[in-house]
Image 1 (cartoon, rainbow, N blue to C red):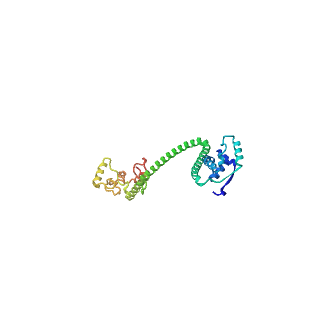
Image 2 (image 1 turned 90 degrees about the horizontal axis):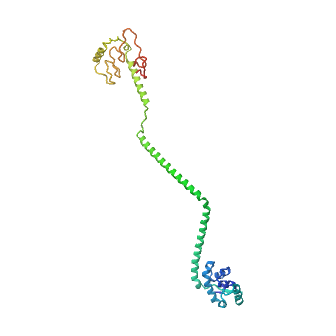
Image 3 (image 1 turned 60 degrees about the horizontal axis):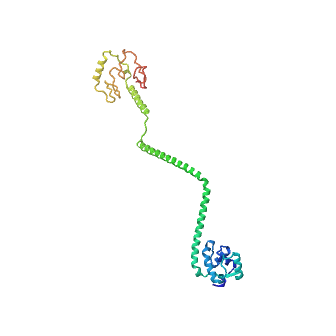
Length: 295
């Protein structure tokens, strides 16, 4: 090792290494000896090797009292008087510190890990201290969140039921696609209209003198006249089943000979004025209740 790598230290620094001190001077002396930074934790492992190296380098350190045999200031002054105020030392040989470096690397890694874990623990404590006041609020919020989740579940169930009902309704309505809904009142009114038109057409096609012509038969002769009319008229009409005796109504309302449009007997006198038709369409007597068509 060249003399350029030597370094001069105060005698106190070398004596502090021999006394197992962790002072700044002792750590600086050991760092120079092993050519790497030595911390307080590592000094416990480095100091024995540096002391042995120092004894071989300066055997005079072996003569005299050991550290601790006398008060430290007295011991330091005696050695400084005998050895001088300063000491010049080179770094240790690389072969001598090879194994030491491996050990120091392991110790440094463990130290870094310990420092990292300590930092994490301190951070966790800080976070806990910051969150602790909110723990009660957090528990309350969790309860409220649980209630909201339950309400959401209920709403989802109702929504699913509504969707199922809608799908069923759509399926039921599919059978009615293209069909028109019919109102019952519309049907009734339509049928009444058709009947009204048919009756008016039948009345319009009859001879004007047919209504009220001829004399009314005797009360006892009415059945006989009806029977004769039936014999003369033949089978009933097929349209509505109302048998006719020679009548030509399109609805098969048969009129016996000499009767009015609806089979009523004629007026008693031949020269009497024709009887007025009943209200609406002549069904029923005048003054009787009517349903719109004289029934």
